[in-house]
Every structure is written in C-alpha cells, then in structure tokens.
Image 1 (cartoon, rainbow, N blue to C red):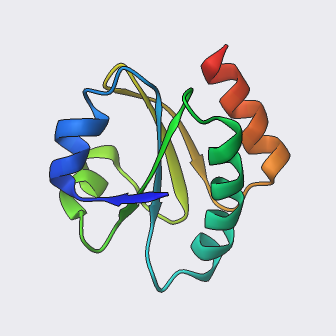
Image 2: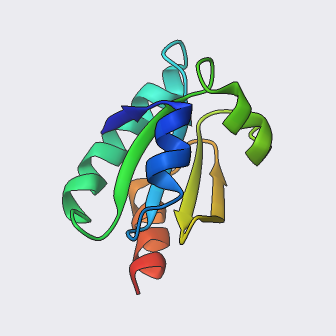
Image 3: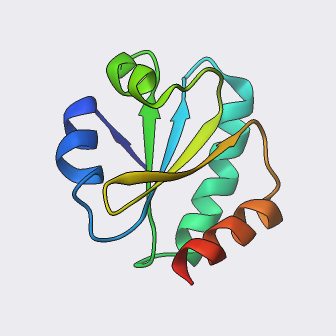
Length: 105
C-alpha cells in the first residue's frame, strides 16, 4: 500500500477515476499496523477496482482536519472526489470486504 502526502491526496486521490480507500494511520499506532495487514490482503483482491493508500496523520494534518478524522485507524472511501464512507477502529476482513463489494457494485 502506497503512503501518500497531502499533495498526493489533492492531486491524485480527489481526481482518481477509480474509488480510493484512504487508510488514516500513524507509525506509532499498533492497531493501524494490524489493520494494514488486512488492507494489503484486500488490496490484492480489489486490484484495478479500488486504489488503496495510506495517509500518516502526523504528516497530513490539513486533510485530517478537513475530513474530521478524530481517531485511528480510520478508513475513508473517496469516490468521484468525494468521501462516501467512513470506518473507524479495527474491522474484520469480512466487514471490510463487504464494504468494498458495495463500492465496486
């Protein structure tokens, strides 16, 4: 999963024709590290259908404030430049898979 900057968020994520799942996390967050393993597995399953990126909350505070992210891990689905869904806290692979299936139709 690619780690992005605020510039990448504005220039790539918001303009992507493909839905993007943004993982708001931090290097010091243990649950985020556990969730990353699940997301990497799902990334393989949804290759070409959903782009997966990681955004470090300590490095990208403007985006964090703009989207109102209050705790991590937080996942935000961006489709057509707009946030369409938020998932806060640890989630099972099955739950995330279900959410992604809804997004890709």
